[in-house]
Image (cartoon, rainbow, N blue to C red; front, side, top):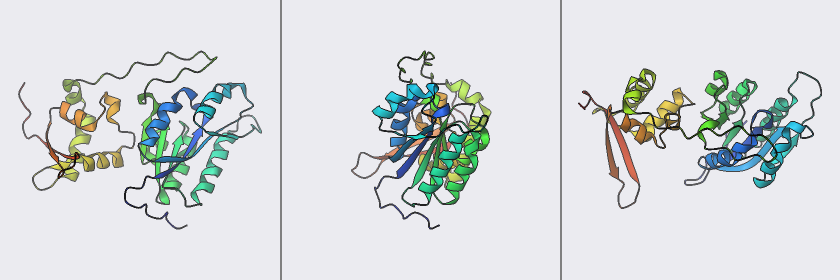
Amino acid sequence: MNAPPEASPGAQKKLAVLIDADNTPPGIIGALLDEIATYGIASVKRAYGNWTSETLQPWKKALLDYSIQPMQQFNYTTGKNATDSALIIDAMDLLYTEKFDGFCIVSSDSDFTRLASRIRESGLTVYGFGKRDTPKPFVQACDRFIYTDILGRPEPVPEVRAEAPSAPKAPAPARKLEENKNLVNLLRSAVDASSDEDGWAYLAEVKNNILNKKPDFDQRNYGYKKLKDLVEETNLFEIHESSVGDSPATTIRVRYKKAKRKR
């Protein structure tokens, strides 16, 4: 199969959004689609499940409000997940149309690990969305994996007893971040891999390097909206921000401090 044509400069990515409704709560769909909009256009939006089942009835409002196409899949036999098979078959059909730049797979099920790997083998980007207990093989098979609990408060679901929404994650303090050896080592190695001879690295390249290693990395997991804010709060890096010509855009570079600032 030929790789999809290169998008013209400034063109947004065309994305296929495939939702496993069996293990995705409908209350997150608004925030989920807002997040997906930052990566591209949701050209296809499909949700898979047995829509004759009472357990999926709360999905009705979300399907209508966000123009998501419900894909019916009956449970042919007990113990077999026909929904997963239907989603995988549809994903491969869409892949072979060569009309998309990437796929958004919304599920916490490890059954989609091979699907994510296969899509990436074709040169397309895979964004995964799921719960914190999503198996690591599926997380690692995606280019980027976003935990749905950081997307904001879920919308109330009519006629269903919803779990109390968790409060927004409070930013982790500097001392806590410095003591997180895994985070510090991840940031340092990414800066080192992206730096010039003077040790400066563009923050955008640092983030790309981090995501190549840990697809589920997200500064919002630590309570920060932007990576710059997280890096700055660690108190371990110098930060230099400069404007680009006459435009409002800026470039941000970071460098590891040889000696930590005294408090």
